[in-house]
Length: 396
Ligand SMILES: Cc1cc2nc3c(=O)[nH]c(=O)nc-3n(C[C@H](O)[C@H](O)[C@H](O)COP(=O)(O)OP(=O)(O)OC[C@H]3O[C@@H](n4cnc5c(N)ncnc54)[C@H](O)[C@@H]3O)c2cc1C
Image 1 (cartoon, rainbow, N blue to C red):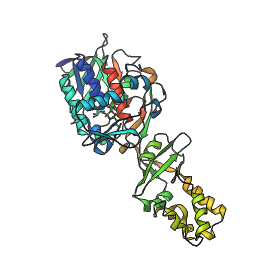
Image 2 (spheres, helix red, strand yellow):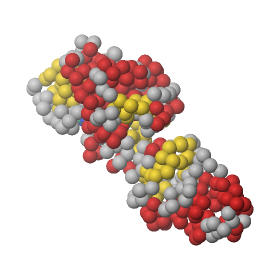
Image 3 (cartoon, rainbow, N blue to C red):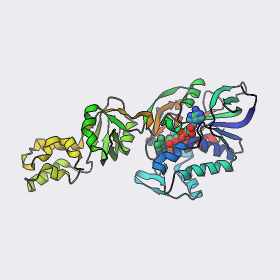
C-alpha cells in the first residue's frame, strides 16, 4: 500500500445524490468528510435526470411508492427527512420549480441547479471531493477504522459510506463496486435487475407494432401485482413511456401486461350508441374520434373498415375487449443500458432503518440506490437518496 496515508473522519464512495447529501450533513456536524468518485464529474445522474430538469421529489411520498423485500424499511428515513425538507433547501437556493402530473416536482430551468446547490452546500461544509479516483482494496482494522486504497492515496477513515448507486447506465459510470464491498463485509444482496426500463417486444409483436412508433396514449397498464394510469409510448424498439416504466419494475420475464387504451370510456357502449344512430358509418370513423388512427389496424385488423351495421353485439364486445384489455407479452427489457434504476441490492434487514448503518460491521453505511429500496418514477428515487443520505449524515 502507498506510504502516503490521509486521515478523514468519514469516507464516502459516490459523489452523487445520496453521497453528497450525506457529506453535507456530516460536514455540517464538523466531521472531516472525503467523497471519492471514479467519474470525472460529480452527480452525472442528477444532470441527466428528468429530461435535464431533475424530478427531484414528489408532493406525495409514502412507503407504497417503493419496492423492497422489506416494505417498512424506508418509512423511518422518509419521515425524518421529508420532501418538504428538500423543497425548503431548494427554496433557500432560490431554484425555481414547478409541479407536473401526479405531484412530480421539476426544476423550471435545469437539473444542474440541483447539483450546483449540493456542491455549494458541500463547499460550505468543507467537504473534500476527489473525482477521477479509482478505488482499490478496502480493509477494516482492529480498531474498526477502514483503510481505503485508491490509485492516488491511502485513506484511513472512521466511517465508510457506500453511496455508489446501482448498475443502471454503465455509460454514466455505474459500477458494481458497492455490491462487492457489501459482499466483502458479509452482507446479503438481493439479486439485482433493471427497473423503470422500456420493454422490448417478441418478434411478431415487434413487426406489427413498429408502425406505431411515436404514438403516445394515456392508458391504464396492469399486471397481477399492480396498475398504473399514465402515458405509454410506442417506440421503434418496443414500449416505453411512464406507465410502461412503472410496471417494468413489477414485471417478471414471461409475464403479460394488460393495457386499457381508453380507461375513462366504455367502448362497447359508444359503438352501440352510434350503431343505433348512424348504422352506415365505418367502425374506424367512430374509433378515430377516441384513439390515434394508426393504432387501429394493429389492434383490430380489417374489422375497422366494416360499417357498424355489420357488427353483432358479440363482435362489438370483442372489439371493446381488445381496446380495454390488450394483452402484450414483452420479449424483455432494454436492461441496464437504459434503465433508470436497479431493483434489489443490499438487504435492508441488515441495516438500521434510522441511520443506514450496517448491523454487522461497525462504521459501515449504505445509502441510496444500492440498498434494496427502489422508488416509482416520479421523484421517489431522489427522495430516497436525499432521505437515506441525510440519515447517515447525522451519525457518521
Ligand atoms: C436517465 C435517468 C433519469 C433519472 N431521472 C430521475 C428523476 O428525474 N427523478 C428521480 O427521483 N430519479 C431519477 N433517476 C434515478 C436517480 O438518478 C437515482 O435513483 C439516484 O441518482 C441514486 O442516487 P445514488 O446516490 O444512490 O446513486 P448515483 O446517483 O447513481 O451515484 C453513484 C455515484 O457513485 C459513483 N461510483 C459508482 N461506481 C464507482 C466506483 N467503482 N468508484 C467510485 N465511484 C463510483 C458514480 O460515478 C456516481 O457518481 C434517474 C436515473 C436515470 C438513469
